[in-house]
Length: 107
Image: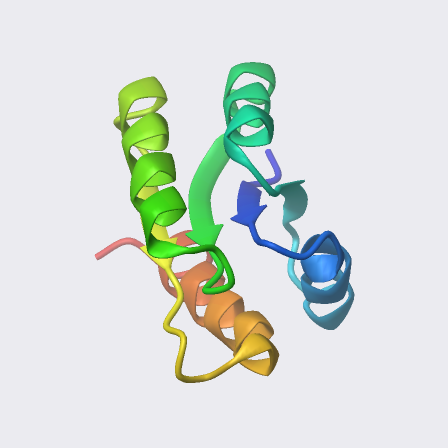
């Protein structure tokens, strides 16, 4: 089964850009940009294995979304990207998360 990654970002192009830059990974990419879309993706796709949240969202919304995700899917790890690396740091951040959480061999 192909792992599913939910990418949450302020800009609609986040999912397309990350998916294009990381097309070598055997991963299905889903996107969301607000609370309603996050809830819809969580309810619609039980195969979500990990969540990555971008830095473009304000802190209040990021905190709210963490609460929403944790209440709907307490089994998920939620990775929150730093702001210092800027928008160009999203794909490298997601790459590290996917390699560490989804593609590494269990110990």
